[in-house]
Amino acid sequence: MTQTINNNQNGNINSKADISAIEAAEEIKLNDLAPEQQLELEKLKLDLDMASDADKEAEEVTKTPPRRLVIVDGGKGGVGKSMWTRGFLQTCIDEKRRIVAVDADNSNPDLLRYYGENGEHCQIQQLNIFKDGSIDRFFDQVKRMMEPELDTYNQLPPPESLFLLELPPQSRQIFKKFIEQEFLETAANDYDIRVTMVVVISRVSDSVKQLIDLYSFCGNKVDYIVVRNLFYGEESEFSRYSNSSIVQEIKQELLKVGIPLFDITMPDLLEYAYDYLDEKSLSFSEGIKQKELPGVKMRVKSWLKNFKQ
Image 1 (spheres, helix red, strand yellow):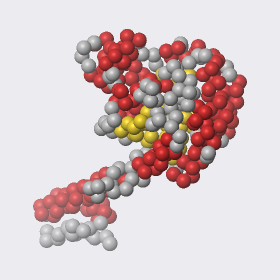
Image 2 (cartoon, one colour; image 1 turned 90 degrees about the horizontal axis):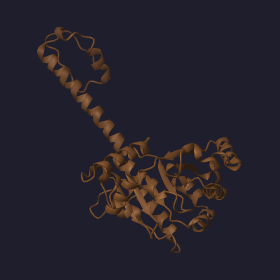
Image 3 (tube, helix red, strand yellow; image 1 turned 180 degrees about the vertical axis):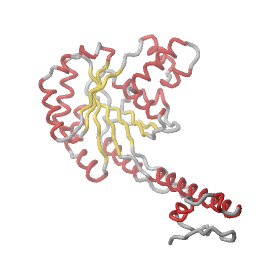
């Protein structure tokens, strides 16, 4: 229905007029309308604007981001995977991105030590991956968090869509067996969740071998992020990775099927600042907020800025 507005002094604007009526009204100079008509018109436009804003807010609330499980590979220890995991978690927290992080490194549970169990935008759980059936239970828990049920207060918790799993060193064979049981196919087909594998490497050839081995059983069923840890040297010094013919073949195979392999770097944090965070068990955010050591504050702030880039 479209309502027309006449230039008479006694005409009233119906508050239920549709948008086309408002657009037509805008063509009329307000000076040609009676004062009460001007007031009614402005009120109607304001009501429509508020309704539109409310619809947009409701749409944003109900919109669920794509489901993603980020797994930090645990094939080789001592390459900086925990450092990258903490940086990624801190980035999500700073960007107010909801995330569930799972620390499977029971011998050195960095995530729990630095971030605790619950934060404003994250929750951290622990997983003993070496216990039989633990990965299966983790996957079942992920499903429940993606599709939550009413809680004891009859409220529906917000669905989770981003998960972070840090695997401990020497867990490759356990993880491989789980993948071979069609975990990736089930995640993609039944739960619409995509897996991203993160491999942090140093300059040694063994790091490259870890990536090649991972690809041998994950193939093109996952996305890949290769992180060159600049603690071990400049970006140009990772020649064993850059010059590997097998790595180049993997990239070409993934490119043909449209699967990304992202090459990124992780900046080096001055050892003095790293040791202070470690000694005090401070997150990167807490390291920036502390006022005891301004040098550490400066170094951590710069490191995190470069990490996010």
